[in-house]
Amino acid sequence: MNLIKKVFYGSKLNSLLLSAKEKYINEFYLGAINDYSSVIEIDNKNTEALFNRGRIYFETDNFIDAHKDFLTLNDINSNYDSKQDYYLARTYEKLGDYEQASKFASKYFEQNKDDVKTKYLTARIKYLNEEYDEAMNLANELCGLYPEDFSIRYLRSLINFSKNNFVEAILDTDKAIEISAIHPFIFNLRGLINVSREKHAEALEDFDYAIRLSPEILIYQFNKARLLLNMEQLDEAKSTINNILSIDEEDKSAVLLKAEINIKQEKYSDALDQFNEVLREDSENVILLKKKAILQSKLEDYEGAKNTLTQVCELDKENKNCLLELAYLEIKSEEPEKALEHLQKVLEIDKENREVILQKGIVEMMLNKYEDAVNTFDQLLLLDPTVEKIRIYKIKALLNLGEAKQVEEELSKISDSINEVDYFLINSKTNLEKDRIGEAEEYIEKAFSMGNYDSSINLIRTVLKIESGKIDEIDGASITYENDNNKFESEILSAIVDFEKGNYYSTVSHLSNLNELDKEKEELIKPVLEYASLEQQ
Picture: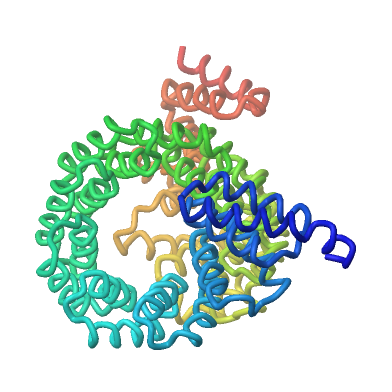
């Protein structure tokens, strides 16, 4: 404040400061705040007014305004009063900034090392800031000085619990309970420690005792319900959660825990309703949306799951796991084009993710993009040429391209380690491509003789018998299929075999099935179907 103001307002400021002090002593806090505020309007650097107004704000739980005043005071004069460090530590603590709280607590402690309250405050703030070793040193000193102090024992128990010193933590909680058994929070802490020790029966007793002391504090019931869920006592867990929700139906933690219980009970629709209830107010909760997508998949609502995962991907564009899960869902719901698009997006984020590259190659095969698939598998083989599974996929893609020579080359690299049935099957397909029917038959019969009746083996075996004129050896029941890809081939082969055997009724049936499977081939099938129908008559 400049000299003119000091002369002109000096007496008025002194009068306001005296008035504010008297009102503060008489606990007329609003009047005191008004007087100190008037002083600060005249002189915004008046340290006495800032300090005392900040102190009143703090004592009346107005921590935000108190914090502002002490910060301003600290900027003007960081050494005005040692208590300003105390108040800055406390207001930072109240506002949840434990790092800054710890900084000012340490500064205040350096000026008051022998003061027990200062030592306790510093230990508590160090604990909140996860400076457990420093907090423990101070707590040990305090316990040595005051072994029968409940608050000190409780604090040291919290620190030991955070350091996973569960036995020591229990010893301190038991001592605290011996000193005073009227505080529900000490039993709640004991319950949490016993959960970590896997002493579930003891933990349940602890939570029940805390609830008896303060049934209105719902966190104790929540902890009990969560424990009951872990103990697989699902009905009791749900009953406890329902009690919480009867008191506070908007308790989101309780709603979500109830959903977890319903998932354990395989009541997926109920769990989905509960997730949706929370998502109505927290629509961009990525973790919850992922869980929702999983539930939708379990309920076979793949379209809904894809929509949910799409929302997650939009919220978290760099989340490669979300894109990958979306791609898997699209594969499951037979949308390989979309799956390939999302797999490529994952690879833009993580270019050398081998599992994703492999999935990309498999999807390319689903889309009959065999040349692309070969290139993709080659990319993987460059990263690691020893993975036989990848080479087998490459061989399958080459077979579909009719590249028999390349198949033989690739096969020679893995013949020592490849599964015998796969080895015989691939060799049979390769020889069939080259019209070496005898060799193809030899390999397929070896695969068949090993007791493997896979549909792929049965189909090739049938083709070879047709090629070699052994129609009578074919048993119609052996032409089986396991998926839609083999189903079309099976119907064709069955129609050919029945036609050659003169079973025209069965031929008509198989050809009719072909029409249903692939409308685009109707014109090709129609003449054969008409001929077989005439022969049948």
